[in-house]
Image (tube, rainbow, N blue to C red; front, side, top):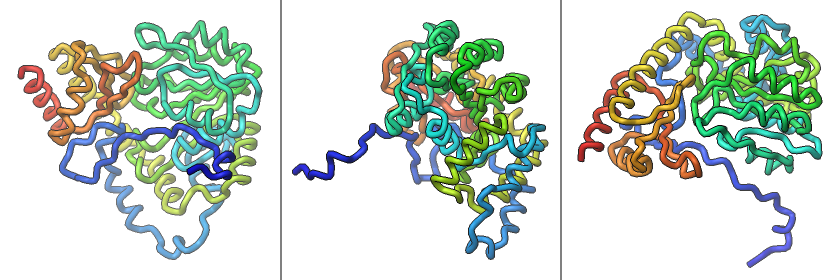
Length: 358
């Protein structure tokens, strides 16, 4: 049966998140969460939260969190925007800055929420195919960017895990002077030092850099994201945010998020652990015959080179090991595997050795 009101429904093909199994006795390597929890200092902060504040509305401007982020990145407070995870921040960016009849552009293989937001918000878009080696085609972005309605680049890219050099991103920004360029740096903390575009936000009035606490800060469950840009861009974002939902950041997020950004020694320790495990795991996969793309993230994108990626994905799941598999053109023989603690990754290698020899 069809109802007349259905003609006015806005229909979209929704984003498909990684599976979130409820069983705790598994090895969950499918959603790029950090395997290390918050530090003991942060646990104390969590335990000290004032219950009385939960009945009140939080500070709509999340000023304490904004202040700490601004100090950490050495920018002024009016250059920071915060939201409920980087997904919220990115959606606000799409809503605020992409209102041209010209299509926005992003890679054909990248974070799969980008086309969902574009479809939902009726933003025209065009995808630029990655090169054969899965790197971003800078020349095409430079060429298309001149007439685009905006540019979105995840750097490092997901799910490929590959980092695009800073000079190449600068070329893209400079060729897209009449539109906003969003650089989504969800995984940048796992890349080499100096890879971020944050230190260039004062050099380009069309650049906005987006970050998240979900990966390197071990707080995916708390949902904290933020953007850094020039004051005019941040004001435009806040105007839209306050017109849509003023109280996006809850009290625990503001308090814990403010404390975590100051807990820098623990942050560096965790990043170092993840990188070391990533390098060991990459070498082990290569020994097993996998093709592994160069990773600057907290995951690897690897192919068994025998057309058995889906088979491995399904067999691992039966053993309580969760990877991410994308049944999509170009990448349907790859697995995205989050880097977990050393013991979990050793279990994965043991599983793969058994699987590949039977």
